Amino acid sequence: MGNRQIQEPPKLRRSELEEFSKQSLLLPTVIEKLYVHFYRISRSKTEDGVIDLSEFCLTIKKSETSMISERIFHMFDSNSDGVINFREFITGISAFSDNQDLLVKENIRMATIRMKEKIDLSMRIFDLKNSNKIYEKDLVKILSSLMEERNFLKLSKKQIKKIVKNSLSTEKALEDENGKYWDHQSYSQMVMKNPQIFKWLSVDLETIKRENKIHRNAHKCFSI
Image 1: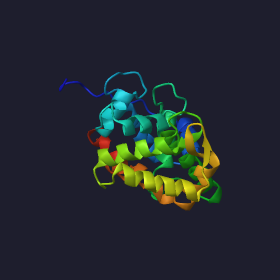
Image 2: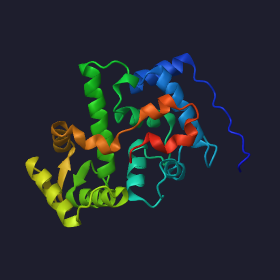
Image 3: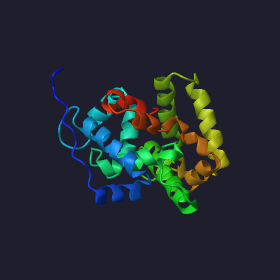
Image 4: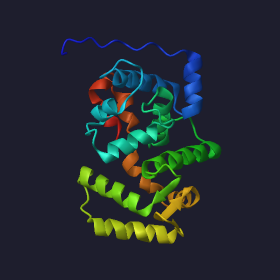
């Protein structure tokens, strides 16, 4: 295993770079580095050209039983086929990159597109029922898991419930037989007022930019 040679990835064609850059708003040079990064992760267990949950968790150094890891994976896996392809990979990376120098120069329209992507993708994390709704109890469950795993802020479940209830009340939460919830519109309004909530999902593209042997530092690219 230690002597296993790492095969270099094929080069992306100029047309592919332009297409991926246009879609993700990332610079072509960043796309090239991300492709190398993606290629190595996708071959870390199974050489199939896509990233499965096991490879994803290995990359971010989390257990496959981690609720947060599973939800972040679900966020990237936008077509819900159980794997992350390169297009999904760069879409997620771009949406949560906090380094503007590595992105195509934004105008108001592009900034709006990126914010919409952030909202749509992040909602997939909290929408446990795939119903386009974020339920109060599900949000409490996910936030409790996040607090426990990251071990950076000690809040009891009771405290988390109170924070969530207060947030729901400010955005006029709806209610059905499963309890109170945000729909896409109310969640979007909350996010627009509090964009800092995405900080825990930020992606460190500077690491990819700096490192040539990025497979050794794969876990640094995600803040989760």
